[in-house]
Length: 214
Ligand code: ADP
Ligand code: ADP
Ligand code: ZN
Image 1 (tube, rainbow, N blue to C red):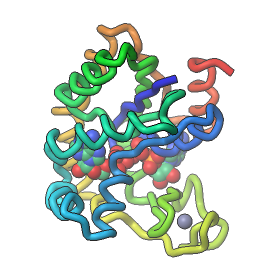
Image 2 (cartoon, rainbow, N blue to C red):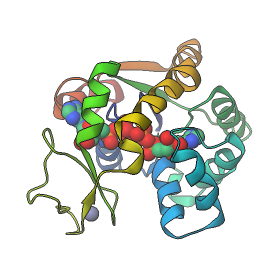
Image 3 (cartoon, rainbow, N blue to C red):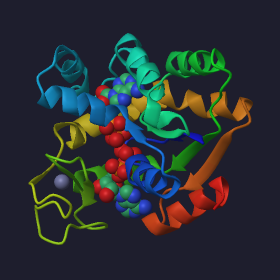
Image 4 (cartoon, protein in one colour):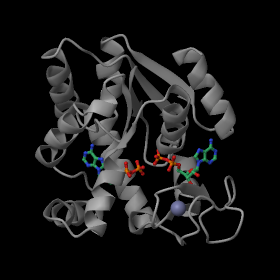
């Protein structure tokens, strides 16, 4: 099962993608996580990506596409995967489609997690991410057991630099301009599925499993 998560920054793609990955036993592939790991490790890719991410801009397609095509070609992705944060532009979607077409495969579902902009700013200011394992929490909605500490690995939780309100506004603009057109793109392909992302995260997940099947 090959799944793409669509939605504004903060819509809950990562939260749901992790649950999908667990239930259907497929890898969760997050381009944001891949870039953040590269930044942390001080790689060339990380250095390049950071200049864009800090401004709330997308990393250029040519730095993203090969990375993802390579990742989905790995052994653990044979039975499918859930892509979180990719594609984010039409050229990225086309590149993925042609790479899959070349090996006789295709994306099965594009799940759009729908959350209005007003909710997003509020959500992002409460997002806290683990510095070590990438687990995500929310101060109000999904709090860690102990304030500021990751339930999973015990390390520190932080507010991502790009989750500050000024940057979130920029990311939303970028989303509407460059990523939202993917909704039409996948609608035309007949694989777009919409879920309401404003409800409880367990209810969002129930809507998703209804679509994917038990
Ligand atoms: P969010 O979870 O809030 O949607 P991500 O963690 O997916 O954010 O991405 C963080 C940042 O990483 C983006 O704002 C962008 O700069 C960069 N990024 C991630 N995925 C892509 C992509 N597919 N194309 C271009 N830039 C990307
Ligand atoms: P994305 O990957 O789309 O950027 P995340 O999954 O990181 O979004 O979620 C953004 C923030 O909203 C996080 O703090 C997360 O804990 C919280 N969140 C996710 N789903 C819900 C939900 N259904 N209701 C309330 N808060 C949520
Ligand atoms: Zn952790």
